[in-house]
Amino acid sequence: MRKHIFNAGPCKLPDSTLKNTAAAVLEFGNTGQSIMEVSHRSSDFQAVYDEAVALFKEVLSVPEGYSVLFLGGGASMQFCMIPFNFMKKKAGYVNTGTWSTAAIKEAKMFGEVVLVASSEADGFTYYPEFTIPSDVDYMHITSNNTIRGTELLTDPVSPVPLISDMSSDICSRPVDVAKYAMIYGGCQKNLGPAGVTFVIIKDEFLNNVVADRTIPTMLRYKTHVEKESMYNTPPCINIFAVKETLKWVKEMGGVKAMEKLAIQRADAIYNYLETSKMFRPVVKEGSRSRMNIPFLLKEGYEALEKEFIDFCKTKNIVGIKGHRSVGGFRASTYNACTMEDVNVLVDAMREFEKKNA
Ligand SMILES: *Cc1c(COP(=O)(O)O)cnc(C)c1O
Image 1: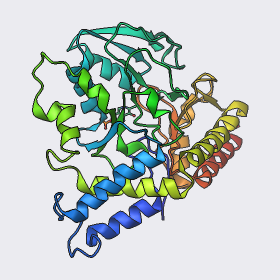
Image 2 (image 1 turned 45 degrees about the horizontal axis):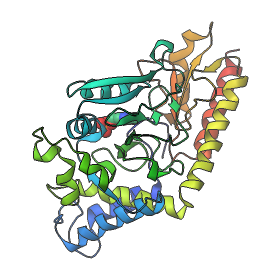
Image 3 (image 1 turned 30 degrees about the vertical axis):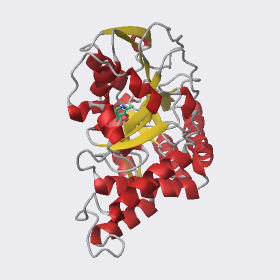
Image 4 (image 1 turned 90 degrees about the vertical axis):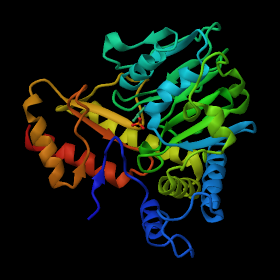
């Protein structure tokens, strides 16, 4: 029986992604080969790659002049590739949690980091306001903070090239891609299995590459743009699965429909948390993510933590244990999470609360 999956990543994926990828593992089209066996240089695989890129561009309304890449290395590899390629002297960063902190650490190896804003002093419980300086080489933000559960739901206007880590909220709302020089993320939160990273990069931005630094071939964005993600062997099966998810997003009505569903899921959980006598939300109103919802037991009930996790297991709910840095619980409600999943969780909380009142 399929569980109610609230894992933060790898995450729940649409049934059609699982079914069609599983079928392609056994036989990819009529090729007589598995998607794991077929050459990445074959026309059959090229068609999969082209479709994934085209669907991504269509679903996100990516304007002309941008390239889409599917690479290995995870979002974490982008943390070092970005400053390696684009940081001449200094870059602006907003620190909104664990992943921004990791990105900042890498950037510091290549130049000066201007910390434009941070919510660290307040335990990253809100998304800080910020003004982007005009004298930095680029500005880096993390649109959704997977661990802390805060999200920036607008696309900032920036006087310098703007880069956003959208690992955990990609395709969950319409994005004005034109406002960004680059959008990237690990696919394992909203698009597919772990092992493939998406990069949407403005071709013009590639001219900003630091000229007087030697960048290894594999770590150069130009390499991957020129070779259309095929400089080396791309993660073929992962790209196939991402293509299936993008197809599903389109069939469901696109990112506008995804946003509507995301709002419904998050509202259902937050509405309950606001009225509960036993549970409380962690993130301040106005900064709340629709994708990751951390919550805690109220004072006096903290000892029930393990008991609630065990109770959830009996309801076939998995993945709600909180990140070790926040504690408590976290429900990750990505695109493939259904209202049914959410209702089962909220009912479980309600029942647990009644039982232990
Ligand atoms: C998960 C995550 C990462 C790290 O992704 P990897 O693909 O594991 O390197 C980076 N940023 C954000 C916002 C994430 O949620």
